[in-house]
View 1 (cartoon, rainbow, N blue to C red):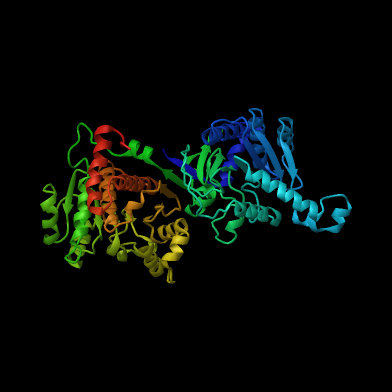
View 2: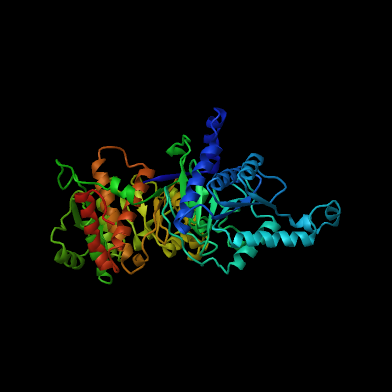
Length: 551
């Protein structure tokens, strides 16, 4: 089900009332973390007793969570080694870990190992520092589980060199790279697959991976977690597709914070949302109450796009589909779907653009939509009709919900035109959330940026991130199928609310997200676009008649 993501500052503020009331949030977090670690150890080695756990302890509360959790594991027979990485750490947590039998290695900073005056004062010499490094690496190499409690959201960007070099040496000693393996363990809340540090141990980031950053520079010196256990609320930093290799699977632990959806900056949706939110026919419904979608897709050059877009709309459970394009495309469509109509009439949403329909049909469709508030979904060639938000006032696109469905190349061309600068698809792919948000803000439209991680952005910056679909969706015609699905769903919801104000932008973005989930589910049942459109009927049938997907 939906998990909302919040700025870290919002989550910190939500903690204050509970802390002021004396609630021990660290106890709640560390207890949940200990349970999660215990489950991981049982899964990987069959038992907790005799396992080896290493804790990276920094100076803050993340270290406290990790240390109290480690103490709990020690009481269940785990061998714990704590590596303190700064001149201070969470004192109460460290004391609890010591009482439970944990060993402690105080790993020195590079300054401490290089300054002769420090050595003269009886602190670690360079030679002793090298021995300590070897001790730490040995503990890491034989650990079943490693906890990252180095830095949290308040940490400055970049790890101190003595920590970065240790992580680098550890990763190299394990013979790993950023593509070493993918861990797909299931988790509560939202999940992503990440790259771990070894095939025999599990690395868990506490609340947030230390020095989390999407930047490629310095990535070898950062934590690459298999799992991130985060507390209270999903932090917006954790859902950026660019950091999936560092977060691993993200697990959200509820510790009783009162967070409001209107404070969220993003929503992660999954199959549970589709099962709950897919529109089902009402006992007293009829074809018009279930929505009518118009499809202007396909051309003499690309007739198949009209077939694919219309097929997915027909199969998605909408009340009626109108074919708005050329007679040639209509003949192809009706030959497959006799229920599609070509007569003009009411519509609750229109899909325009797949297969670059001829201009005469585009102009006729625009004229038919004048003086209405019918939502439109613009794809492919129709994206050329989009201008800056301020420039569409008084045009046919004004005063109606508009959804754009570009891939990275199409969004690059659109933004280059809107912003007056050269934007490349590689720049889009380097920051999909950021560019989708910018496009939505500039155009005033809902923007669905297609890709491995589809991003749906609203003009106010709010994003919907559907769970990732199968790789089989990367095939010719897949986007046409998606456009038809979204058109059908938008028409259905608009028909239900046609006598009310237009769908709020965030609600429309959520509906579009459901369309992506239908597309994903169909993709798990097909390997090409023709079969994909047919699989939509199977998905919709399971949702309408069975109540949920059969996965």
